[in-house]
Length: 360
Image: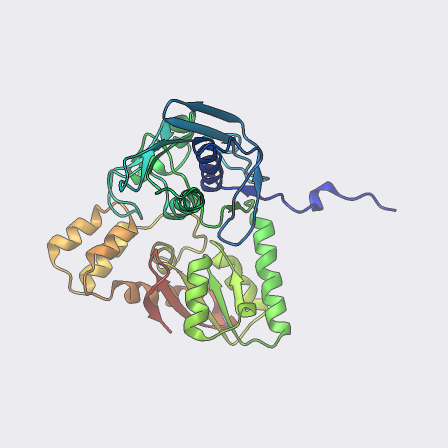
């Protein structure tokens, strides 16, 4: 019998910083409510998964409880793999609600254009929602109101953040607490491209003539709902739009709708076929020129040229159809690349997954 090639084993998935922060919050809250520190501590992720986390730190003091979990990013080359994620909970007066604070190693937002307001700790919306749900559920079971200050810390976060895009985005003081599904899917270009190809193969075998290539979960859901297509028509292309289009040259389908967040579709509009933030950036000059072509006032165009993010430029557009103009340019760039492999359409979504622009 031939030996198993270890290189063929499936890549091990890990847990996001947001999932770790949520689990640490649940453990600290349990201790603060008098139930002790659960170890391991289990949480429910947005997709229904229920991972268990081993505690690496626990402390109960006068008016606070703190728990910590060491992040396991699986086989992903994540700079935060092995980092200690701490959650410290302190009761607040009745009616104060849940207040988030950035502890040591967690950044603070200093510029507009991100999904968090300026001055807010860089704890992203989904981790905030998961943490709120944990607190509200536990407090309801104990018959008390959910009024707590939640401080998330990553002791080595400020140093680790230097290896990320946070400084360029205006997030200073440390890392962002990220995660939309709670699961870290190991980054592997070859593995992801192979998954894209297999998805196309399966769809063609099912005689599906219209596919959706989406950059993420929100844009995928929006596109499938808009187009009335089954889940089998969806190709999780991630940032590898070029990999999908190249495969369709040799394995064509009748139609392909590319769906993605505004910033990523702006990159495609510039002719970029790898949309990952580490390998391509949005040209603010390009977006400013598109705005100018739509008749935006000169002062708006000037602000757009110096904007921090593509999302900030989108906000400057007002009633101008900037997203649809970007969609049209993205469609043309993709059509040139794929040739006769598919008739291309493009849907552009905002951060909430709403369709804000389209071209077909």
